[in-house]
Image (cartoon, rainbow, N blue to C red; front, side, top):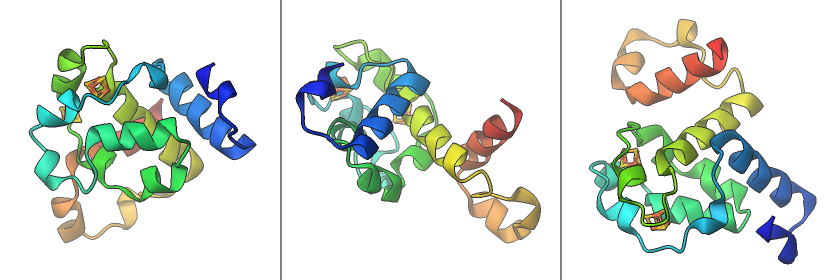
Length: 136
Ligand code: SF4
Ligand code: SF4
């Protein structure tokens, strides 16, 4: 893999390879053109753009990825995946980040413990991602 040529430590390599494995995408195919972010209808709600998240993954910057709200705001509409000139399934990468977090923290979202008013405010995809993890 291409990250072998960069002096990443084991934790960074584990993070990058896990995201690639879950998503089935080569993260280094991205050349940061920004077309995915430009076409995303939810960019204004995201604290980091989609291509910024991809860049963080490329650099093994797990903390920056996990701190962002981008992958939770993503609605899996696939617009970015269709627009990408490198044919990267960007939506699958966002899903992979959600899956990665929920595999590390399966109790991150305990639906039964959440008050009704909180559930009503949560991004739908946060709940969907959590249920996918629990059922898949
Ligand atoms: S559109 Fe594709 S190549 Fe361009 S920044 Fe997004 S993922 Fe990378
Ligand atoms: S799949 Fe997610 S990141 Fe991609 S355009 Fe749709 S909402 Fe934005």
